[in-house]
Amino acid sequence: MGTATTAAGEPPGRESTGPLTGFTVGVTAARRREELVALLRRRGARVIAAPTLRILPLDDDGALRRATGRCLAGPLDYVVATTGVGWRGWMSTAEGWGQGARLARACQEAVVLTRGPKATGAVRASGLDETYSPRSEACDELLSWLLARELRGRRIAVQEHGAPLDGFAAALRERGAEVIEVPVYRWAPPEDPDAVRRLVEQTVRREVHALTFTSAPAITAFLDAADEVGLRTEVLAALRDDVMPVCVGPLCARPLEDVGVPTVSPERGRLGSLVRTIAEALPARNRRELDTGTQTVVLQGNAVLVDGEAFWLPPVPAAVLRALAERPGWVLSRADLLRRVWAGSAPDEHAVEAAVGRLRGALGPHAGLVRTIPKRGYRLAVST
Image: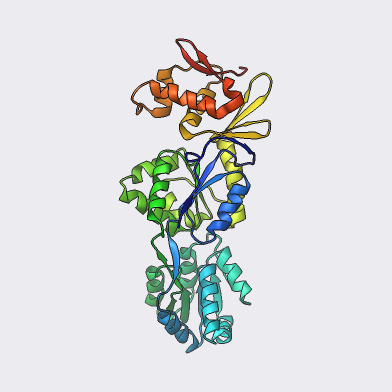
């Protein structure tokens, strides 16, 4: 089931700080979800885990057994590994059938192509070497590499990654190749669609600062979930503006890039690199230092950092503080804050007064940071 830990659902309080303190990050991955969540929390983030898909082994391994039998029926010329988890699953299942050694020999005698670092690592772990792996991690480049060869009469095994690669296989068959499609697992709907829907809504409300994606199908499923609740346009607007989409690599990012959403990716497609990228990029775009004259107060995401302690703020009070921090020392009227924070959606200025009260309560001993200027509005007690 998807699990959620949200800044909105927890009482504010003091916590130790890390590079991601103050930030809430959405995790959409199913596989290795716990590892990614732990890495983010270790750096101070609060995490909303809502896998948009799940990976299932084939209900009937007859298709995989038949494909493996075809691979062993004659020499293979090319073998294409598209995912690490899929390749390992194929080798492990064949081993369970007593065919592991034969399959490894068949692949060793062929030219092995890998789609990216994860597939490459899995291939090497099985004792094989790849001949070619595109830097883009794109199947298009693998296909171009193959189509540049004479393929008539060649036998090509293609390990699929959750869904049939119809266009890939069709292009090879048009050139006269015999293509053996090897289905190892398939994508299925999430176990907890409500968690995904909540993450869509939290994205629209800007209650998350970043969303992480480790596969292109996960992005497609997230956007489909937004479609189902009529929020696709709003989600894309949030991702173009306030919510940072972080993808494990350029191939993963393609569904967002194709609709004009810029993404952030690490140089290496690894979970550790993904988390390091987030830990660098989020503070760079959402951190502000304020000088009170006696100490430096840091506003980072939805937290205020003072002397090594973090005071987490609910989303609306945090937005009020950010609005005041945009012009430190200046007075903003209630009407100004109403426009900036609520975009006119709040019924009246009493919402501002209530939010300021909650903000001061969350700041605890530092409540004096927010000053009331009678008949004018509010300002931060900082040096200008």
